[in-house]
Length: 75
Image 1: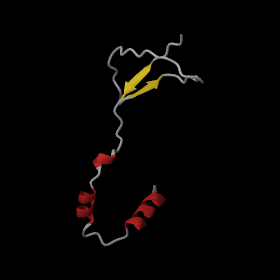
Image 2: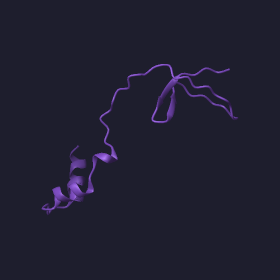
Image 3: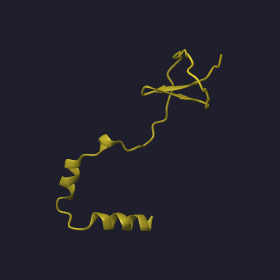
Image 4: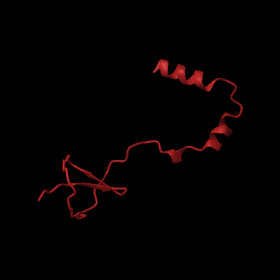
C-alpha cells in the first residue's frame, strides 16, 4: 500500500509528491480538513469584457500593436 498526501481543489487532486504507477490501481481518498490556499492575483478570462473593451477604445486612434511593442521594449 502506498500513502500519499495532497490537496483537492476544483475537482483535481494535487499530490505533494510525484508517483509513478504503470498500471491501474485502486485508491481511497479521505478528506481530512480544509486547507488555506494563498490566493494569487491571477487574471481570469471572466475578468475581461469584449464589449467594455470596445467602449473604452472607441475613440482611440493609435495602433494598439505599436503601443504593445513599445511597452515590451521599455520593460
